[in-house]
Image (cartoon, rainbow, N blue to C red):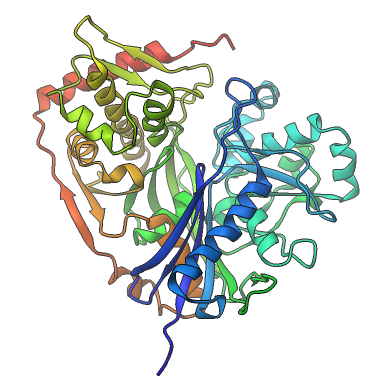
Length: 504
């Protein structure tokens, strides 16, 4: 009897880490999840402990294998997907981070970005990287660490320090760490640093010079799915050494997991933030509407690009209802509470806790709750918070159609908040198109598994993957035009109230 084999995926997100294993029919066999601590040293600053994330990764792998009574020897390949832009710098000899990971949401690097803007460099960075000079990306975070950790700049110049987003940190540790660990990243993650040239897919020496970042710190850039593999997993005391052969930033992984392989395919992920990506094929489409141009994925020598709109606070707003306001106990309660009122009662919420990302790009914006009356209650606030997730995606959606010239006819949706039927129906109503939710909601992890499995021929090709994508539910628009236009009018007024709150 031939023993069944599986592909594993590490999904390292903003709030926690999950390991999942899939069979050849893309069925989820088992998973395990572990949250990690969110660290807020100052207003607008967000950090994670890299060692906690690494230890949690080992833990969730072992727990998943224990649940299924399998071993690493039953895993033919492992893919990694990660919270992008979150930046770690560590000592290549001791393996110890020099500071906490600076999270993608963190706004501490505003002065660094403004200094480069004042040198009239923003056009250069956008032309080379497809990105704007914003606190979101890794380059400014590296510079902050080198400027603010004593001795870091000198150690970096000597070649003692190395950088990685979370994917690089995990792959380095998975493949041995200080004992031969592989220092690599993929094209999708590299495209989120403000340091990689979109056309050459290499680190750009001039851009590194403007940030004063030694190129010796930077990982080797590899395809997202690589038949040569990156390295082998090495765990002491565990049999089996599966290759790590897939690596994708989380939003690109979701695009891949949704099998959006054709130009014009689009998906929206409702996670901690919202991320809408549109496949543009082999064309680099420059945005004029506040979107980002990014690498979607690289399969061998073939590179696919995408337009992206990034919203900083999506599902995190529901966590805020639960943890800070404490008007719900669990995230799913938000739907029941919101349904208890027929509408938002004129209440609008802009979750600009760390400013506004695409398409507004205003670091000075802050969270705003408007339209309150004496009759406003917790249910109206809950509904306004849910609706804010869809409104923000509407702003991105309109910008994307404007930039691409493509009239989108449907949108594939995934992520934790896509389970909320009220939210998904409202999203379809606002966009006035169908929103299609697949059976497998964890498309980010599935995308990483697909990338790893393709590399080792566990799956034959992308057509094989297309056949395995199955619809769970289609949400069709039901709202009339007058109601839609009126709600959008008031949302736009609320956005303007949120902007410019902090003096720059």
